[in-house]
Image 1 (tube, rainbow, N blue to C red):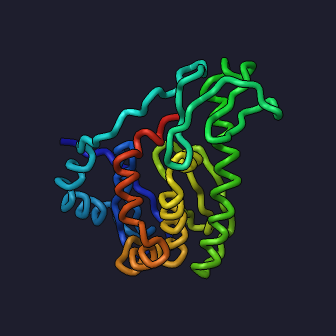
Image 2 (cartoon, rainbow, N blue to C red):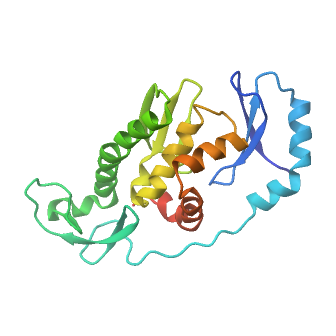
Image 3 (cartoon, one colour):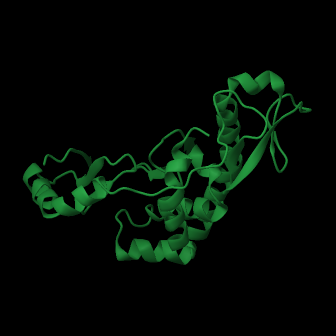
Length: 227
């Protein structure tokens, strides 16, 4: 059976690693000097594991009353790990507001999911980016740039230029999950690969990392939805 994959080379990388993304695509992270033959040997050695990962059927729970194309009373939307009721009601600002429930002005309800997406994006910037700076100080690393991005299948990423990016959809997850993803990406500024040292750093700074990984495995597909 043919295995499709893409190769990402970097001068900073010393070891070759293979990851299976949430969209089940296979990515080979390799040192610049790695030959195609060397990469193929590693792929061949992990072929069965890769096919198992790519074809693994994950189990997810359905959300109660998810929003439709036009928002209506009684639907629900997630925020920081919980589902909250949507209520169509006027707000002082004329925009989406949150007070133990989502308040959506009637004039905006036909815009549907896009209205909530924009609210999530802004709330992600307000909530996640300050925590990135706090964790960076605690880890003793310098972040060149931190951004909230729209990336459906990756929760976070760290570039060779010391930029860290975080998926806006994380704002729908509990705070301990957000903190785990932040620490995970910042730890790459200290250790590029997923070595024992890397995981020791993550566990030391994010004690609930195993719980967070389990939460993402169970609920990840729901986070991938627009709202």
